[in-house]
Each structure stands twice: as C-alpha cells, then as structure tokens.
Length: 152
Image (tube, rainbow, N blue to C red; front, side, top):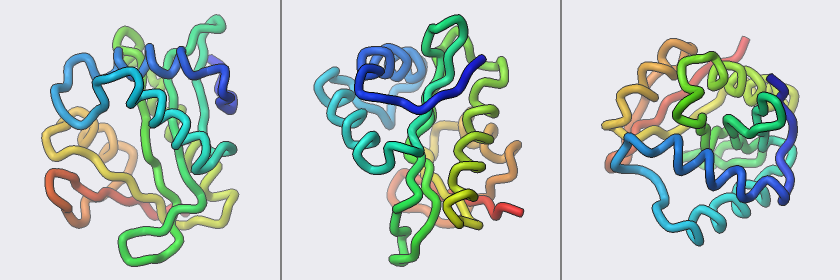
C-alpha cells in the first residue's frame, strides 16, 4: 500500500471510495455527486498537505483529510480530522489505521498535541475504531460526538 497526497485529479476516485465507504450507513454523508465534489474541493482547500489517499496497485482504496489550520469549538487551534473513508471491500485490512497514523504524524509535525474529530452518534463501527486508536469521547453537538486524542 502506498499513501500519497491528494490532488485535484483524484476527485472521481474520491467519489467512488466515499460512496462505497458509506454504503452501509444511512446517515452522516452526502448522497449527491455534486455535493461530494464540493466536499472534496473544500477538503483540498482547507489543507492540501493534510489530504491523503491510500492506493493498492494504483487503485484508490481510502482517503483521509486532516486540517492543521482548524479552530476548534473554543476558538483554539487544533488538529482536526474531517474525513476518513475506506472502500467497503477493503475494510478490516488496516488501511484506516495506516491513514490515521499518517494524519496524526502530519498534524504532530505541524505542532499539534491534540487531535479531534467528530463522529455520528450511531456510527458505532467508527466509534469503536477510534477508541481502539486511543481517542476519547468528550462532548456532543446534536447527533455528533467529539472525540480527541493527545499525542505523545
């Protein structure tokens, strides 16, 4: 597996992986391709250096978008993970874990000691995944749970 920075030419690959990743979840995602395109461009604009794609044999199998320029809930600078998606048929192979490691290393290199993400309260598989990686729950806004991790 190779992990590299995303570029604008990865748009169609992102759409495919995004749709596949959310196939079994009925909430928390964009359903229309035009909205997914807008989201991709927004993620790329937020922090181009923090947007990565995982590839196996030149096939995009996962993406992670993090943001070293994010202002948290209390106007503090914080490392933010906006999105992580893994193609359905590649889940359970450690791709998500490797993408999270890449994001954490990137955010740490930008001076962040705390990383946060928001996850849908009914996205039980993702919550379990983040807990296994050392993320803790702290706070809730609507149907979104804030999870954070202190980097060592």
